[in-house]
Length: 174
Image (cartoon, rainbow, N blue to C red):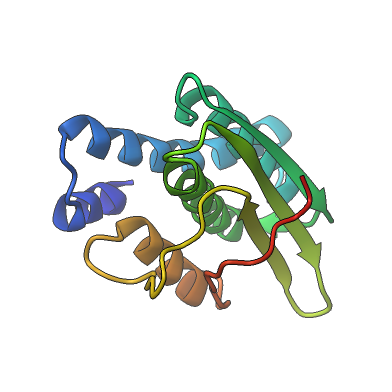
């Protein structure tokens, strides 16, 4: 948590303190959700579908602005992760869902965010799709003003030893 706050202080370019604190709080709450689920079940592993449900519930209650209607849905497999991976994945998922709300629905008042979970032979695939605004032409997910996506990239490649892609897929499942 301290590292997240330090990153926020170092890289953020927020217009207000409130924006910076809201982003930091959402990151802390993503970690908190994982630990709350673990203490409730007293296990060494955690259902990632439960983590996803928790993050989407939090997003609906605290991130989606009043006047907007954004439905959230989860499709796919459930899989279990050890605590360290569940925490990293919760942070990644939280960043991607919040980006979908903040940027995908900045000018739109309704839409849908879908989280797809798929357990494959040698990996787990998590995709966050939304039917909001598309990424701008030539968008690059890295840069000093993109702390959230930098966190995603670092966690996916480092802690999770995976790959991260950001693209404009066709989303026609309304």
